[in-house]
Image (cartoon, rainbow, N blue to C red; front, side, top):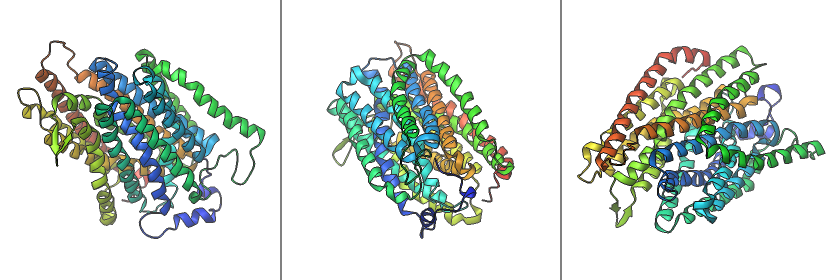
Length: 503
């Protein structure tokens, strides 16, 4: 994150003041989650409409749309590795967050101008922008804590809960605007709130003390011509990358080749970054890498939200009313997870604190994550049993399945973010956070492939046959998730020893 390791220099008094906060949370955490909240509105608002928009407006077949969705999401998360690296080496996280947010807003407004014609171009702006924004604002949360501060997990849990307020609102507002008024309104609303998020961060970044300045332009200094040109080169290069990403996103063969190449390259860079690390640091980085690999499979299951589950919600769930207001099933699909995170994330974070020395270790929490997502997909697999003659199933059962899957996410995702900042030396924060989100890229890509495989492509298939095809796939995912959870429990003692995890 463009800051030296805390162990290599005396701690800046301003940073010490931030970390020596009283109570459960540092005040800077609230500003960060407000900025991230609006970014998540933009991201999840667009995510929630992608597959339905491609099927109904771009007239793409369901299985192809699933693969296209996976490719778009994969590139979004893959770019976080690049964004983390450039923040570490060139921009610092302050400039990275602002630049990324502006690109995301530009992407949303571009699509809104002509959704059917500029969809892919605008999406590519969003891909690059998310790469600069996402890994850096998440990584800075860990910098607000001293090493070994047991309040860190609770802080990440609150951050995770707060940003999901944006995801909840975006998942409902963007889809409802698009479905009722026109899709240009969905994308325009995403762009507007992204501008708000950038404004909040810009107005409050002074509270972060010495954190986040460019390593090329230390705090209080004037940029040299060389440093200025390097920064301008990054800005220009990110814009010039958009046509290349457009080519990759719209060509499945190129997407496949990219996904096969980027992982090994990232691992090589990770290995090079480990040079100079102590044995203890290397052991912890190995644990981080194992957790990152397992997270790929978790996200491949969980991110059916934007593909197969979006299609099930659109075609196999009824529109119901709550207090006289009609509830679109896709809005339920887009927002249920975020609502449950908002309600239960703080409670789970406080539970970890209250358990004290009996708190399960990070690896066991990861295993719990797989077991709960397995339970959720088992319930999803039963939707066919509740379907009527029109192949419309139960919105209540669908929502309960999302509750179970969300508990699984809460056992893995905020814990994973916290674990990355615990296990990585500070000079590798950007790289390790980039790898964490790169794992999400692979998970998203595989999610699209899994959804495509579950889709009944027979043009003569009945609605019930299409629903049953998805349900069979959900049942298989539940079995796979149990297997990964058991594997983590088996590995837990070894990984705990390497990480020196005392919980």
